[in-house]
Length: 243
Ligand SMILES: [Zn+2]
Image (cartoon, rainbow, N blue to C red; front, side, top):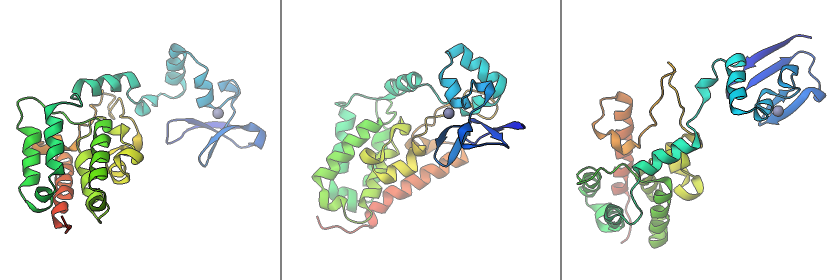
């Protein structure tokens, strides 16, 4: 019996057994099936890992999957404190002012300086604004949708509002299609994947900041992302609505 271990794209080890039969299957996920393997206590590597303690887990991964660190994401607790550290309270005057500005429809749709004024608000403050949480952004979106329902449903408007809000989100991995909108989810959530712990050189990777913070970046990709975001926001002024 020849068995080889292959690295699957999601970091799970797959045993490819030439004499595989149905009975050798441990479990399946999507279109992939995972096979039982003696080495893994007659389970697939992932199911086996679940039965190990923290230290056993690390030892196992180092031994059988030396590149497992590539797939490690920040632990939930670290992500929680990261977000908590940067967020501002829901009742902060900034959030109230920002909300007021995006509800000022005449300015939002017709005054070419209004987007710039909103951007100024984000930067020219006496304190550091680091962004909104996904939950805060969802709340603001829901409020906007409810108050201006027919305008929100005008073609192009929902996209602009979702871009505006999701581009401010600190904990972007928590952006959900149901709450933050499908477009916001597609562009900003990285499909809900939590940020990776390490870069290609195994150095700790910084968690990506929300796109609005890239206004003064020297990084070419970040600059492009910022400009794309800004263009999406400016599109709101090409939409004609009846106020
Ligand atoms: Zn399994």
